[in-house]
Amino acid sequence: MVFFFVVYYINNSQSHIIINNDIESGLQQPRVYHLVKPVIPDHYMNMKNSAISGSGGTVLQLGVGNDRVHKTIPEVYLTRLLAAKGTVQKFVDDFFATILTVNEELPPAIKWLFDLLDEAARRHDIYDADIVHAWKSNSLPLRFWVNFIKNPDFIFDVNKTVTVDASLSGIAQTFMDACSTTEHRLGKDSPSNKLLFAKDIPQYRKMVKQFYHDVARLPQISDQEMSTAMQQLSIQQNDEFDTISALKELYIYVTKYNDQIINALENDINCKKIQLAHKLENVAFTLEGEDTSAC
Image: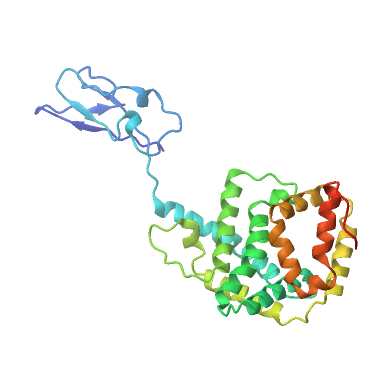
């Protein structure tokens, strides 16, 4: 059913009757409005405001042509968002539980990296747990998983529409909040995606902290085990990547911070044992076409 609203103001005592959108006494056709603003304005929307001739009556319109502002009703959309959230809630919970669970399938590189960050904190006398938590969050969940959540088309052959992109961005933001240790105060002006999962964030944060705790309790990964795991991974992906291009990008980064990297390698005990600083200098001499120093 289509509803039309016409407000008719009478300047004199004579009343006019609206019959089939026509006004008696030869008045002009009144402007009509639907409950929802049309996407493409019709001829009524393009008409200029004009006073009705004859009896002095004037049509007061609910909105004035192109100046009419379309305002949504937040409560309506919030109800729809809550219904949609209830539909995907289990999938979101299962996904977070899968990537935040320590089992035999956890890549050894994660344990090795987290131990490296813990060791760096001890070496620099950093005792604030939130700082180490932030390091780990930025190295894995926020660096990899958030990017994967927002861009599934990077891995799967799927078409990411605008609607899907907005929905996935909301889930990614929820995961980012779960990795944060800072409490965010929410109010009526807060984004809807934050309000939707506000009650779930505390539970998700517990999952993130428990994941870091469980990784820390795993047996330490030796350098030999790490080297073997990376070699196996390299063999599996041998035909997937351009090794030369990857080395070129790494070398560009090394040349940019050459002095800092050489200094760090010379001051590290493990790096000094295998003479990494010397080997890196030899690589630079070779690529620059200079004679390498004696080994």
